[in-house]
Image (cartoon, rainbow, N blue to C red):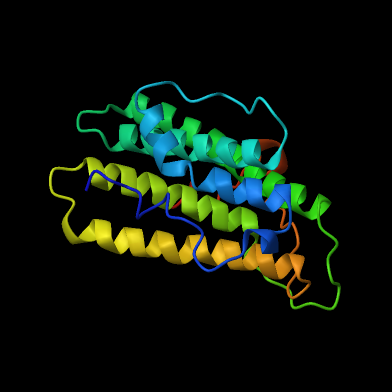
Length: 207
């Protein structure tokens, strides 16, 4: 399947653009719609280390770049013939990028909250826009790599359907957020190395 117009780049489906509430929400959705094409580009060009801008679209693309890096670090760990030193090195890289990824998710949520007046009586949505964007990023990467396989088969159709469902869910969530029908909070993960203590629980068990 070479034409991805019916997949991650699908058009807005049943949601009025105006209902998304101005540039911040629209820019986020527009950035997410680029995930597939940008991941394809990054297989030819090095992705940026950090966003050049501080807007919500740049935050989303930064998160996507971190997931892109994670995907390929994890591939390196699984590479046949990788020695213990390389596996340990890649695992540390994965830990570091994961910490940045969690911070990027929180940054997206904080950026959205800065631009919206929440209805304090609205039901609390415990999956945040940032976590949905993260899931869409990973799904787009999975579609890219499945599409690059020799015989993607039925898996690609399933992934496309999952992406379409989740993408539509993000649109609906942002529209409901603007309408005051739902609210969310920034959930801090505290997963950076400076925020975690070493635990030796399994050291004696492994001896």
